[in-house]
Length: 63
Image (cartoon, rainbow, N blue to C red; front, side, top):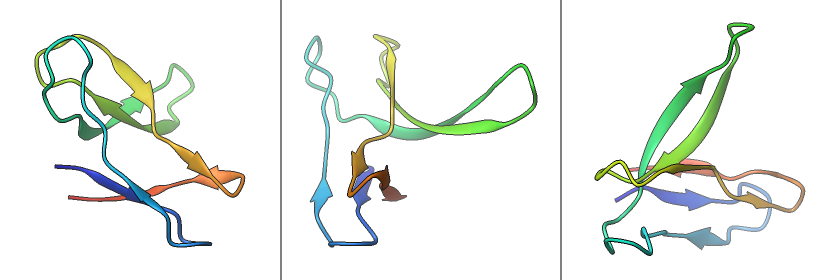
C-alpha cells in the first residue's frame, strides 16, 4: 500500500477507492509538456487523484 507522509509535520495517510475498497497505489502522470505529477490510482481503473497535500506541499509516497 502506498503511504503518503508529510515531510514537514510527519502526518501520514493511506487511501482506498470508494467504489471497490482497493488500496490506492502510487503512480506518476506525464503531462503534455513533459513534466510529471505524482498521483494515487485505483488498481481496478476506477480513477486517479492528485497525491495528497499537507502543510502546503505534496506528501511524499513510500510503498
